Image 1 (cartoon, rainbow, N blue to C red):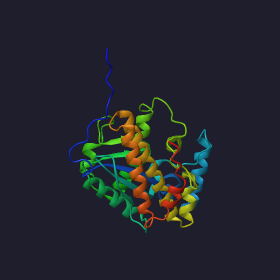
Image 2: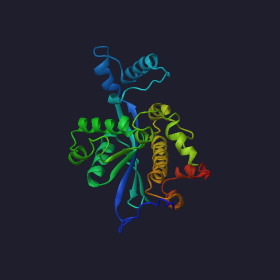
Image 3: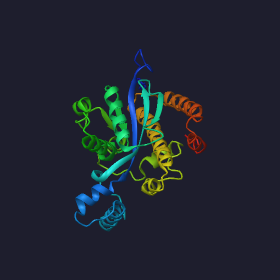
Image 4: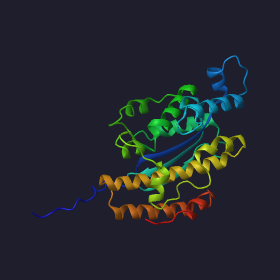
Length: 274
């Protein structure tokens, strides 16, 4: 019996003219004032003291020694978005509220964008476990309306949000040891470089918000390129189409490096091994 080779789905007639995906990553720091009010009322701790105490308590209860404080006490200091066309091409790269990076403005601008691109699917890595709950709580704090988002994203399997970690682990059936860094390096992307997530709080304390947003931008780009490879798995792209999109994405970033100098570090560490 003759075999038929599977081919990717044909692109729609208006391919590349509509934003179809918003690839998102965030960085946060603990809200020391809120921690003091909720966990240590009446103890007159400074925000820094409340964070230090909560981190020590987290280390004592974590089997890995992590000092990460739960999402309910986190506030955003970086939200970066890659806007992607319905032909999967990289259309735009933005770190919200640059160069000020004010938490309230970051949250407002993020949800305004989500409501504006109401038909675009959100793409994250562990977004269901962290990024989106954090941003939803931030919207709650600031009294923002998320009408379209709430109607379209509260279905785990049929909503308008693709969490790549959730998808690659068969919805939590297995662990993905190495995470986004592993997947990015599989593809020859930079993955983790000089900054890691456990350094963000210290960098913010030192006033290095730009470095934190650069790190967030790198993770967002890694998420985009991992997303492309998952679309090869689903048959939405052929490997040849993905390679062409990666090539065009690199050209986009090279042109953008004049406005975003940190991209030079990303490009320098891009090995193209794949």
